[in-house]
Amino acid sequence: MRWWKILGLAAFAGVAATGVVIARAERRRRAYTPEEIRERLRIRHAEAGTGAGAGAGAETDTETVSAAEPPRTGDQPPR
Image (tube, rainbow, N blue to C red; front, side, top):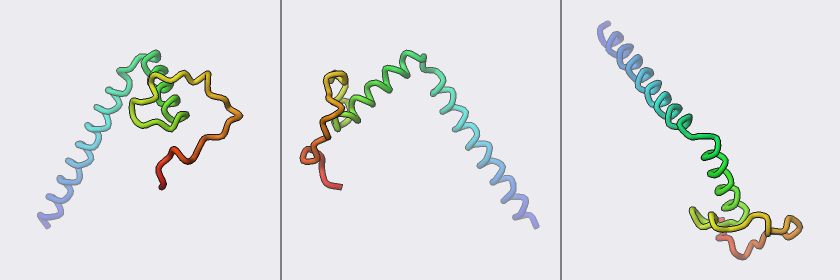
């Protein structure tokens, strides 16, 4: 019957450790100012709109891209 107690304590420790990890991530996420979040979203949107890799789309101007022009599929790698 002792192994049930050990298993219960291990499960409790696992739940507590998971809670600590989630709390740290939430604190880190909330540390951003709204302006920083907007800037990050604009950069990610520009990268997604141009099909560029990580960090390559930060210099592009998203207002010059025509919405009527379909994206070219030849520039993208096959899935």
